[in-house]
Image (tube, rainbow, N blue to C red; front, side, top):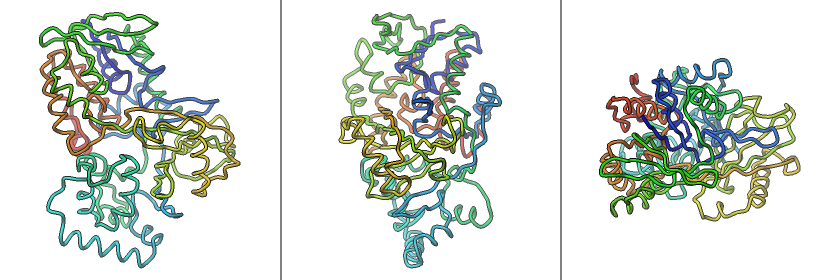
Length: 464
């Protein structure tokens, strides 16, 4: 059986892992120079950088088992500390009501409470946008202070143009009631209140390099720096994938194709071409990119958090990772600190168009403006660019996605998986699960990959 997997991130490698366990030897095509996708670990002069910060937390028992099966004792238990930086204050996140009120002051705190009560007395009748969703649960004042600025940095559009599904996937279960309960009684009933998580000692890429090794030892093939240039179809079946590597195009026969490539890339590479309506829909899907400016700071301790959210509107950085607080092995020596200054942008916009030198100057200037480190303490820096990091939930994405999905579903031996393959803001464990189930479908099962989502896997006992 010839199985071609496009993409060597968590979804594609999980599919490959499951296939080799069942005796199938897939060919995996990864366009990058290392596996892991956005969950890879980049290295610079002995420092390791995570692309966005990847907690290994799940309620899917099977995913948990695979993580420990692959890494064993290299899997660390890391306590979570993350705070919001807002106008010079550090405020714990998830929000602690008592601590938040002490930071913002009595007058502002009273306005937040009154705003919350007003939202509960007269909630928005509809919850179509992220703004409506958050205001109904927290009130307009809390929304404006702790959600609006950061969210608009991430997505580059006003919150009233972002669909409520984003909030439902990322912060569902978080409410003022749960926050108060957690603050007063230590209860923890929400996904967003996770207080510790697993993490590979050398970053998330350590996991995916190990999975790659398992696949190759079992006879599977993983090609790096290899692009899927075309997918040839005959009727309702794909028959081959053209791969470009080592300066040569090679046509690989395919009984099954599993793809985690962004849907616009996948659809545009079909031959014969997809219907015009499908191509138009694919071109309408949009993404946000991520730039990580890795700063090497000559100081043993900069701040105690794993990461901080920067809500301060006067700077452009959106989030700052402190990698040695994820794992001490992420830095080569204890007397220095590596920070990941994260800039959310769109390919081709002002930030994306900056040179690496300009980005390093910007990040150095902003870390000093935030009072976290002196510019003179920045010894070195690197820039990591990640296109198509986040699928955008704009007002029309559901219609476009449905058009694409109906066409993809009509191709009987093609499955799309993972964050970009489904244009869904999946977490790592959800992407893995889509990969595992796609492999079982190759072997005759009939799993609906679109049923793997946050709602099901975090708030119920998920069983594959």
